[in-house]
Length: 230
Length: 86
Image 1 (cartoon, rainbow over the protein chains, first blue to last red):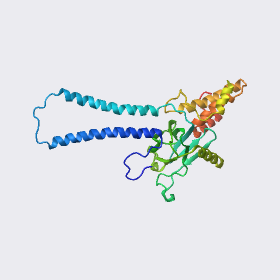
Image 2: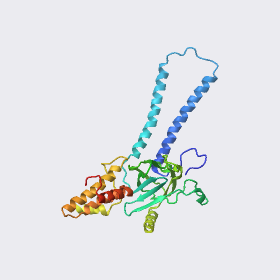
Image 3: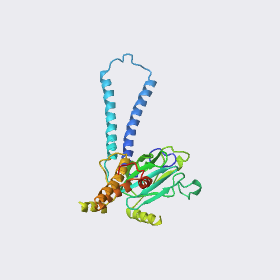
Image 4: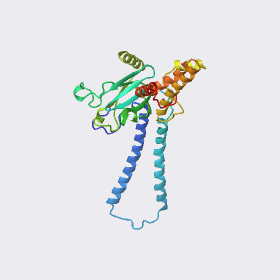
């Protein structure tokens, strides 16, 4: 999850997010190298006491500093497109969950077999137990089986919201009257957090998303219990 | 034919990929299966046939459609104000 003075992304909790992390490392490394090179040129030119009065045409270097950037751009584009198409692959989900945005909470529906639905409100700061995270914890978590492809259908019941979980590499707008599909696989059991990512009124910052990935057996036990209690 | 449909319904896990709706916007996928379920029911009952095959469409729309949408459409159907052609 996020922590104070964090610089980079959260640790990846899904294969797609791992790819995005690696790509970001790759692109950022290119950016740093170019910046370092330019920084060196600037300092070298500014601190030099001599100047060359005879710099005129220079076919060779013109070719080099046109072709090389083009190559660098291709080196960025190819992995980027690879990930884009990877995210767009046809997947065969094991489970469909609907996430409905309301002012100001999320409600989740698991209706593949029985009808399981519940609301997920933020735990107010004064009600937090020691060790819990301020503005991130919710009373009912979205429990999902780990290592299973999950389809999430995101929509809203009133205004625009957005369902985002950075550790899973997922963000999908919740639009009233529209059903937006996204998918993820939770690589391992654990808890990951997200926050509403589209301004939706006074408590926009106070409707977090908590996804808890558990082993499949535990998921089945939990859903049976939830349906019983309903 | 009905055996395979029964098999499919028995082994139903969740709504499978539907090539008619390959993109992010699945609104039509939900709506189309809702329509298809009711049309299937209407067509098969009219011919006095078993409406069990229609259950596939019901499973799919129940998986995909938000409960509030289904509730609203069911109420409209009951009240005769549903806009879709069944």
